[in-house]
Image (cartoon, rainbow over all chains, first blue to last red):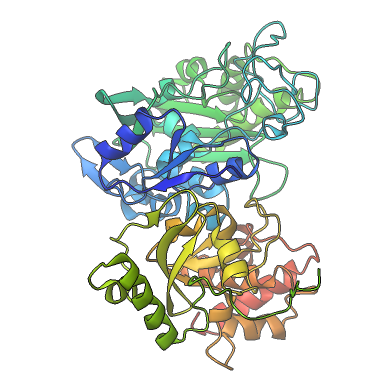
Length: 332
Length: 216
């Protein structure tokens, strides 16, 4: 690991300035991903700005929103009474991610900012456009069973990236239409969850739309209309403690067996949490049934394309969508 | 090399080693540092870990305080040192194991302020002012922790390498209220891998402590 200077600023402004004015400086919160990357020599910050003592640790009820501070731990969110009562989807997604130990370390902001677990990103013997822009993509002609089926170029693009975003929390936040609050050298702004992560295009090194020096301060979730009919389904290689092959966040507002509102998002299928807008449109106003769920899943899969080893996702994903919807609607 | 003494238990004489918890040595060294820096009462400050006091130093050495198994320590280390390496290499607490060193196996699980975390994915300086409990701090003297007793009773290990991490995680799992059923334990202990496959016995041991109403 390369040597670095460790600093612990006492104010938000100071922390932002330290990173905004020094291209080699990086924020560190829980560190569960950054330290991993530093050990692999993939991240090599010259200065680590420890933000763990900044006052971003509250879960607060605001008018029409629940505001979760960026430094609240994943385990704290998952066991918070108000979150349990109003956003069970969030709790399910959090508990499906990582392990008890990691959830006690990882923060909400850090969870959103974790990098892909594509093995070619981690293995410095291979080219990777996300690690070294323009070097090529090891996954394109390599073992790509974990990789994306949505938001990937029609023709193999040597500058692009087919990695997926690994966060479960982000998938649930996408379905719940959360807003990410960020503070930067030029002030505060809000980014809708769906615009926070980006598709790779020709800049796969850029995971998010955050600008240099910007820091996540909180995530706001609109008051739930989905406290009851929700389900986070995660398909993975082992029963627990593994990244998603495919995951589905489903939230339904059902009135007398009719779907008033529905939100669907998928993980493990794209460079960002993948909202299923077309499927949502199809389901809205319909009567709950497996047939309509199956139709929605078919619509959701339009535009998906597989690589050599991940064609199974084209079958697993629609089945996961149907299953998540059935479990959310308590339809067995 | 003839002067290479890997088994020499003598701590390095660089003012960083307080595992012996010799209070007189501690004060002596604090005073020595005080006379060098001319700050008014540093030994009074350093005797009490204070989370409001930021660690100080540069890219080579950072000074900070930790409480490890009830002992308050003033330490100084390269900021790259993980909590795991600090415990094992500087403090000689080798009960906490290094398995993968990348947060995938759980062998390095310790408690920080009573919560289970992975010591390998944490820089030691970032734990400034916190209370660390390792496997060495679990038993009360010669009296084993109920979880340790249960692991012995149910044969919850073979080679034993993952066991310290399993135990620290199991104690936490119980405290978190996540040990209510076999399925619950399997899910919430999934961050601790056991290559020997002692899982069924580990689950039995945890359930035994849970149903036995023993304090974790």
